[in-house]
Length: 155
Image (cartoon, rainbow, N blue to C red):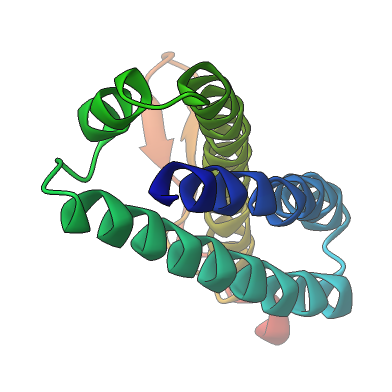
């Protein structure tokens, strides 16, 4: 009984995990295009998918703990070894784990993209506000600072 409930929870997570992956891929495109309204919409949808996945994950852990098994892969393997649907349980669990790993990798890539864009924006703001002057090469080949430039707003 518990094994079928666990299998159902795992199976139920495929749709939200796939949707989360699609949202992360769309987010990547929106980040490159700096489409803020789309990013806000994606964020709301991502949060809903993550909450649902977390709830199902907690339910799966509770089932394993209620059977006095560890709430991790080893607990699932122990349950599967005693179940008639054990092979299917492990197979579906592995597929879900792979899908969630793809989501995590896409999220890491999006995070790196955000960091690059933040650095570029900070650099642009520094230029616009007359931040630190750029170092240029002088006639001797060494770097020299130019006279303090004026902010673009005062130029």
